[in-house]
Image (cartoon, rainbow, N blue to C red; front, side):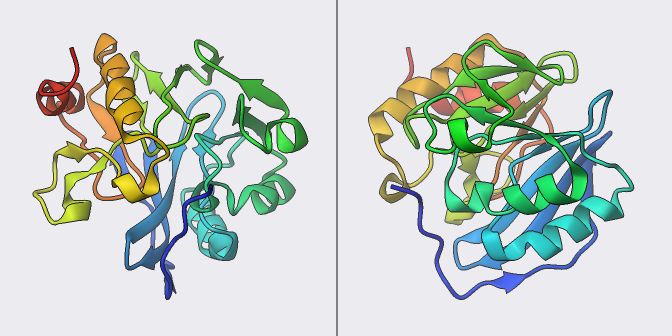
Length: 220
Protein backbone atom coordinates (compact mmCIF):
# COMPACT_ATOMS: atom_id res chain seq x y z
CA UNK A 1 0.00 0.00 0.00
CA UNK A 2 1.51 3.40 -0.91
CA UNK A 3 3.07 5.32 1.91
CA UNK A 4 0.86 8.08 3.35
CA UNK A 5 2.57 11.43 3.87
CA UNK A 6 1.33 13.42 6.85
CA UNK A 7 -0.46 16.70 6.32
CA UNK A 8 -0.25 19.63 6.47
CA UNK A 9 2.69 20.32 4.22
CA UNK A 10 4.37 23.44 2.93
CA UNK A 11 5.57 23.80 -0.63
CA UNK A 12 9.18 24.89 -0.83
CA UNK A 13 10.48 27.30 -3.46
CA UNK A 14 14.22 27.31 -2.88
CA UNK A 15 17.30 27.06 -5.01
CA UNK A 16 18.48 23.48 -5.57
CA UNK A 17 21.55 22.37 -3.64
CA UNK A 18 24.55 20.98 -5.52
CA UNK A 19 25.56 18.29 -3.04
CA UNK A 20 28.59 17.20 -5.06
CA UNK A 21 29.69 18.05 -8.60
CA UNK A 22 26.71 17.88 -10.99
CA UNK A 23 24.39 16.27 -8.43
CA UNK A 24 21.48 18.49 -7.36
CA UNK A 25 19.05 17.98 -4.51
CA UNK A 26 15.70 19.59 -5.29
CA UNK A 27 13.44 20.07 -2.29
CA UNK A 28 9.76 20.30 -3.25
CA UNK A 29 7.86 20.33 0.04
CA UNK A 30 8.15 20.04 3.79
CA UNK A 31 5.92 17.75 5.86
CA UNK A 32 5.94 16.71 9.50
CA UNK A 33 7.80 13.61 8.26
CA UNK A 34 10.53 15.70 6.61
CA UNK A 35 11.39 17.05 3.19
CA UNK A 36 10.03 15.75 -0.11
CA UNK A 37 12.73 15.85 -2.75
CA UNK A 38 14.11 14.67 -6.08
CA UNK A 39 17.65 14.41 -7.44
CA UNK A 40 18.96 15.67 -10.77
CA UNK A 41 22.28 14.23 -11.97
CA UNK A 42 23.94 15.97 -14.91
CA UNK A 43 25.85 14.01 -17.52
CA UNK A 44 25.62 12.74 -21.09
CA UNK A 45 21.93 12.10 -20.41
CA UNK A 46 20.84 14.36 -17.53
CA UNK A 47 18.68 12.21 -15.30
CA UNK A 48 16.04 13.05 -12.71
CA UNK A 49 15.50 10.49 -9.97
CA UNK A 50 11.91 10.52 -8.67
CA UNK A 51 9.45 13.39 -8.85
CA UNK A 52 7.92 14.41 -5.51
CA UNK A 53 4.25 14.68 -4.55
CA UNK A 54 1.35 15.40 -6.93
CA UNK A 55 0.88 18.91 -5.55
CA UNK A 56 4.58 19.78 -5.31
CA UNK A 57 5.21 19.76 -9.07
CA UNK A 58 5.45 23.56 -9.33
CA UNK A 59 8.29 23.63 -6.82
CA UNK A 60 9.93 20.62 -8.49
CA UNK A 61 9.93 22.20 -11.95
CA UNK A 62 11.08 25.52 -10.54
CA UNK A 63 14.00 23.72 -8.92
CA UNK A 64 14.90 21.84 -12.09
CA UNK A 65 14.83 25.03 -14.15
CA UNK A 66 17.04 26.79 -11.60
CA UNK A 67 19.83 24.32 -12.39
CA UNK A 68 19.74 25.30 -16.10
CA UNK A 69 19.90 21.55 -16.84
CA UNK A 70 17.18 19.92 -18.93
CA UNK A 71 16.51 16.35 -17.85
CA UNK A 72 16.37 13.75 -20.59
CA UNK A 73 15.48 10.79 -18.41
CA UNK A 74 13.26 10.23 -15.37
CA UNK A 75 14.00 7.20 -13.22
CA UNK A 76 11.50 6.14 -10.56
CA UNK A 77 12.95 4.12 -7.67
CA UNK A 78 9.50 3.00 -6.43
CA UNK A 79 5.96 4.22 -6.79
CA UNK A 80 5.02 5.69 -3.41
CA UNK A 81 3.12 8.95 -3.90
CA UNK A 82 6.05 11.12 -2.80
CA UNK A 83 8.23 9.63 -5.57
CA UNK A 84 5.85 9.67 -8.56
CA UNK A 85 3.67 12.73 -7.98
CA UNK A 86 5.34 14.89 -10.64
CA UNK A 87 5.67 12.12 -13.23
CA UNK A 88 3.09 13.46 -15.69
CA UNK A 89 4.21 17.08 -15.29
CA UNK A 90 7.87 16.23 -15.91
CA UNK A 91 6.98 14.18 -18.98
CA UNK A 92 4.84 16.99 -20.35
CA UNK A 93 7.38 19.76 -19.76
CA UNK A 94 10.65 18.03 -20.70
CA UNK A 95 9.64 15.07 -22.86
CA UNK A 96 11.80 12.76 -20.77
CA UNK A 97 12.29 9.05 -21.30
CA UNK A 98 10.72 7.28 -18.34
CA UNK A 99 12.16 4.30 -16.48
CA UNK A 100 9.99 2.46 -13.96
CA UNK A 101 10.95 -0.62 -11.96
CA UNK A 102 9.65 -4.07 -12.83
CA UNK A 103 6.76 -5.12 -10.63
CA UNK A 104 5.43 -1.61 -10.03
CA UNK A 105 1.79 -0.93 -10.79
CA UNK A 106 2.63 1.87 -13.23
CA UNK A 107 5.41 0.07 -15.11
CA UNK A 108 3.34 -1.01 -18.08
CA UNK A 109 1.29 2.19 -18.18
CA UNK A 110 3.80 5.05 -17.91
CA UNK A 111 7.23 3.56 -18.67
CA UNK A 112 9.20 3.90 -21.88
CA UNK A 113 11.48 1.30 -20.30
CA UNK A 114 10.75 -1.16 -17.51
CA UNK A 115 14.02 -1.82 -15.72
CA UNK A 116 15.11 -4.53 -13.30
CA UNK A 117 18.14 -5.94 -11.46
CA UNK A 118 21.39 -5.40 -13.37
CA UNK A 119 20.05 -2.96 -15.96
CA UNK A 120 22.13 0.15 -16.63
CA UNK A 121 20.67 3.64 -16.94
CA UNK A 122 22.81 6.76 -17.45
CA UNK A 123 25.84 4.98 -15.99
CA UNK A 124 23.93 3.66 -12.96
CA UNK A 125 23.28 -0.04 -12.35
CA UNK A 126 19.91 -1.03 -10.89
CA UNK A 127 19.76 -3.19 -7.75
CA UNK A 128 16.48 -4.75 -6.62
CA UNK A 129 16.03 -3.77 -2.95
CA UNK A 130 12.68 -5.06 -1.65
CA UNK A 131 11.48 -4.53 1.88
CA UNK A 132 10.16 -1.00 1.94
CA UNK A 133 8.34 -1.87 -1.29
CA UNK A 134 8.56 -5.18 -3.14
CA UNK A 135 9.49 -3.46 -6.43
CA UNK A 136 11.93 -0.88 -5.06
CA UNK A 137 15.32 -0.49 -6.77
CA UNK A 138 18.35 1.60 -5.94
CA UNK A 139 20.78 2.91 -8.56
CA UNK A 140 24.57 2.86 -8.13
CA UNK A 141 27.22 4.53 -10.30
CA UNK A 142 30.63 3.33 -9.12
CA UNK A 143 32.49 5.52 -11.62
CA UNK A 144 30.93 8.64 -10.14
CA UNK A 145 30.74 7.06 -6.66
CA UNK A 146 27.04 7.86 -6.23
CA UNK A 147 24.19 5.70 -4.95
CA UNK A 148 20.56 6.80 -5.26
CA UNK A 149 19.10 4.87 -2.35
CA UNK A 150 15.36 5.38 -2.73
CA UNK A 151 13.78 4.46 0.61
CA UNK A 152 16.05 1.47 1.20
CA UNK A 153 17.58 3.63 3.94
CA UNK A 154 17.04 7.16 5.22
CA UNK A 155 19.22 9.77 6.86
CA UNK A 156 19.58 9.13 10.59
CA UNK A 157 18.58 12.72 11.40
CA UNK A 158 15.04 11.90 10.23
CA UNK A 159 14.66 10.26 13.64
CA UNK A 160 16.53 12.80 15.75
CA UNK A 161 19.97 11.16 15.45
CA UNK A 162 23.10 12.90 14.12
CA UNK A 163 23.28 13.66 10.41
CA UNK A 164 25.86 11.82 8.33
CA UNK A 165 24.54 8.33 9.11
CA UNK A 166 21.86 5.96 7.83
CA UNK A 167 18.91 4.11 9.33
CA UNK A 168 16.27 1.77 7.95
CA UNK A 169 12.88 3.22 7.03
CA UNK A 170 10.38 3.09 9.91
CA UNK A 171 8.55 -0.21 10.17
CA UNK A 172 5.16 1.46 9.75
CA UNK A 173 6.20 2.52 6.24
CA UNK A 174 7.68 -0.84 5.22
CA UNK A 175 6.06 -3.92 3.76
CA UNK A 176 8.70 -6.20 5.30
CA UNK A 177 11.31 -4.67 7.61
CA UNK A 178 13.26 -7.93 7.94
CA UNK A 179 13.53 -8.16 4.15
CA UNK A 180 14.59 -4.49 4.08
CA UNK A 181 17.45 -5.36 6.44
CA UNK A 182 18.53 -8.27 4.26
CA UNK A 183 18.36 -6.20 1.07
CA UNK A 184 20.65 -3.46 2.35
CA UNK A 185 23.57 -5.90 2.52
CA UNK A 186 23.63 -6.07 -1.29
CA UNK A 187 24.94 -2.51 -1.40
CA UNK A 188 28.17 -3.52 0.32
CA UNK A 189 29.33 -5.19 -2.92
CA UNK A 190 29.61 -1.73 -4.49
CA UNK A 191 31.80 1.30 -3.92
CA UNK A 192 30.24 4.73 -3.50
CA UNK A 193 31.19 7.88 -1.67
CA UNK A 194 27.78 9.58 -1.80
CA UNK A 195 24.49 8.05 -0.63
CA UNK A 196 21.42 10.04 -1.69
CA UNK A 197 18.32 9.55 0.48
CA UNK A 198 14.82 10.99 0.26
CA UNK A 199 14.14 11.35 3.99
CA UNK A 200 16.65 12.86 6.38
CA UNK A 201 20.02 14.08 5.12
CA UNK A 202 22.13 12.41 2.46
CA UNK A 203 25.61 11.16 3.30
CA UNK A 204 28.15 12.83 1.01
CA UNK A 205 31.39 11.34 2.36
CA UNK A 206 32.34 7.71 3.04
CA UNK A 207 28.76 6.60 2.45
CA UNK A 208 29.52 2.97 1.66
CA UNK A 209 31.72 2.54 4.75
CA UNK A 210 29.15 4.36 6.88
CA UNK A 211 26.49 1.96 5.65
CA UNK A 212 28.71 -1.03 6.34
CA UNK A 213 29.23 0.10 9.94
CA UNK A 214 25.47 0.42 10.33
CA UNK A 215 24.41 -2.89 8.79
CA UNK A 216 27.25 -4.93 10.27
CA UNK A 217 25.08 -5.83 13.21
CA UNK A 218 22.31 -7.46 11.18
CA UNK A 219 23.70 -8.45 7.76
CA UNK A 220 26.09 -11.37 7.28
